[in-house]
Length: 360
Image (tube, rainbow, N blue to C red; front, side):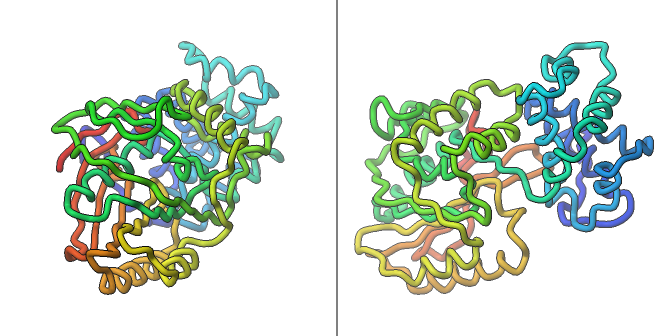
C-alpha cells in the first residue's frame, strides 16, 4: 500500500473486484489531480454498491473480464463525460464545474436513466487515451539511446496508436530541462516540469513513424474526435487545446496509421528491411494492459528474436511508458539491442506529460 492506496492485481476477476476497481480508479484519479473524474467514478461506485437498478449498472456488476485491466471505470466515465460535452444532460454541469454540496450519485443516476441506450456502447471497448504530451517521454528516451551509442536516426513503430497523435511527434517542439528538440515553432510545444538531471543533448532525427490500433480513430471525423475528447480528464484544459492542435495537424497530413492488432503489426514490421544507420524502435504508452496476454507474448518473442539479429549498424530499441498503479505514476522503461536487452527505467512520469522525474 502506498499513501493509503491499496494494491490490487490488475488482472483480477471475480466477486467484489468490480467495486474494488472503481475504488482503485478513484484513488488513481485523485493522485493525478483529476478530482472531477474521481467524483464521477466515485458516484458510479456508490450506485453499484447501493444496488441502483438498470441495464448499464447490471452489466458493470457482472463484468466478465478483469475490470481494472479493461479500464472499466474509465469506459463508463468517458460515456458520462460525452453526455456533458454534447450538452444533452445539463445537470451534469454541477459535477464538471466541480461545485460543492451536490449529490453526485443522484445526478449520475439520472443521467444514466435518461441516456442508458447511448451509454451502453461505451462498455464495448477500452478508452482511447491518446495524449500528445507523452511524446516528450519518447523523445527523452531517444536522446538517452543516442547517448548509449545507438544510431540517432529513429524509425518508430507504435502499437495502440489510437488516433496517431504521437505518430506526429516529429512535428512538435520539446524543451526538456533546457534540451531543445524538434522544429520551431512546432505544431505543439512541450515543456514538462523536470526533476533530476537533464537528458543527454544529442541531435536526433525521426525518419519514419508508423502505428497500429485495433480501432484507429480518424481525427478528421467530428464524432470520432468527440469520443477522444470524452476520455480527456476535464480538469486538464491544456489537453483539449492539444487535441484541437492535433486535429488541425492531422487535417494537414494524417499520421501513418493502420488497423491491426499489436502482435500482427510488430511481427510484420520486424520482417521488413531496416536501413543501415537507423535505430528501429517499438514505442507505446498506456496501452500494454489492453494488449491480450497471447499478443503480449508474441510481441515479446518477436522483439527478442529481432534483438538477437540486431547489429551496431541496425540496432533495435523498445520504449514503454506504462502505469505503475502503486505509485500512481508511469514508468519510462527502455530496452535495446545489441546491449543485452535488459530493461532500464529512465524516469517516472505524469500520465499526460505534465512532469518527468528523470532517474537515468
